Image (tube, rainbow, N blue to C red):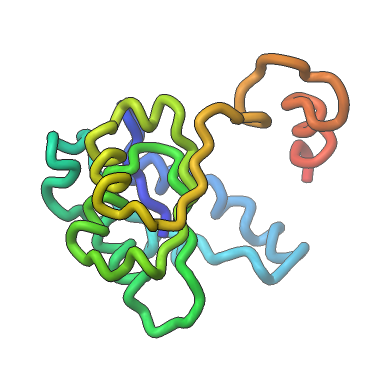
Length: 168
């Protein structure tokens, strides 16, 4: 799924706007590879997650986003479900609260930093109630997303975009 659960601005409707732009390029992209997902499929998996940070308990009510996580984790599939969180971790906390058994199935990659501090209640709930949850937490490395630091070489934001993204 594509879940929107940011701190501040940004909603599922913003993801849908990006998909509409993607749809304009989709015929050309398909010419390069048949692996690009269809715009309607991407729309079908776009869900609104939590809009507000969690209350002191670390969870409150289910959202489209948390229900999507539970549904995907409970599928009959031996593979783990990888969940990348670059926003609030509220929906993970809610999904774990609603269906604790999914903790064995999910693998969380959490871009924490400010996202962690903006929803510390959800983070603390996960840490205290699910200490064995498989999670990679990154609180300081955002290389490739913001300009700053050493931008020399082929991995700098501008040089990387020029070489690998722009015009392709």
